[in-house]
Length: 92
Image (cartoon, rainbow, N blue to C red):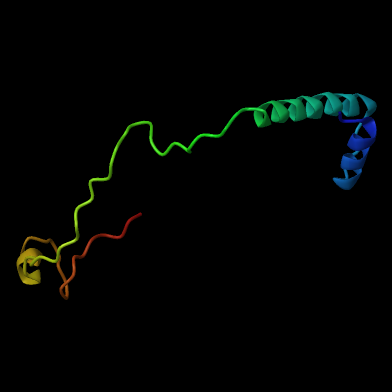
């Protein structure tokens, strides 16, 4: 249970100056939070973490080195190819 002394210490450490009404509100709010956390801690969580809601397996393929098109042939279709690279307008 959270006490007035606990709230006063927390407010002092955080350099908060609370009125009597704010202290009572803080006691109720923090007590509710602690109660909720204890309820969450009481849940049986002894199951394996879920990776996906669907039973999906990875369909990765092996990396294979294959021949590509010659650079000159690819750059023939590019607008503004320069020094063997694609040239594009600056993003704004």
